[in-house]
Image 1 (cartoon, one colour):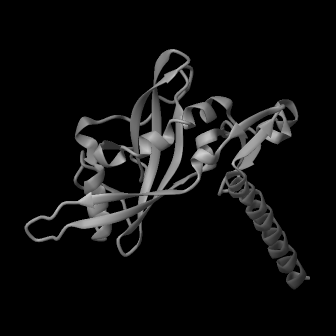
Image 2: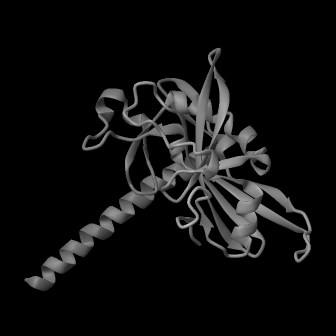
Length: 225
C-alpha cells in the first residue's frame, strides 16, 4: 500500500510537471509564430524573440580589450500580469485565450497595456551598454525608461538578470517590464542613487566570475553566479 501511494504521488507530480512544461512551451511557440489573436485582434510578439548584441570592454592596464556577446531573452511577464496574492485569475470572465503560463507554471493573463509598452523594449535593449542600473534587493536589477503612453510620459520599469553563459557569452533575461499602476499597493523598487552600477561593469564582473554586489551596501551580494 505504501509503495502504491508513493507511485501515485510521483505520478501526479510528473503529470503536473509535464502540464507546466507543455503550457510553458506555448509561450515559446507563440514567439516562434510571432503573434497571438485575442478577441478578433492580432497582437504581434515577434519583437520579443531572442536577440544578441555585443558589448566592448576597452583594454585596461592589466586586461586586454574584450568583446562580449550578450543573448537577450524575454519572458511572458513582459506582456502579461499575474494573479493577486491568494487569488486566481477568472479566465471564464476575461477569456481563456488570454491565458499564459510562465516558467513556474503560474497562470497569467495577456495584458494589452503591457503588450503595447513592450514594443519599446528592443529599442531600450539596444542602449543597455550605456546605462546605469538600480539594484532591486531581490537579486536582479532594473532600469526606468520614460516612454510615451497615449500622449502622456510614464515610467516604464524594466527588470532583468545577467548570467554568464560560456566563454565570453552572457545571458540577459528581461524578467518583467511594466508601468506601475497609480493605484498599486506596491511602490516599486527603491531607486537609490548610490545603488547604481553601469552595465559594462556588470559584464566585466560576470566574465570574471565575480559576485555583483549592491553598490549601496558593500556587504550585500546582489547577484551570484
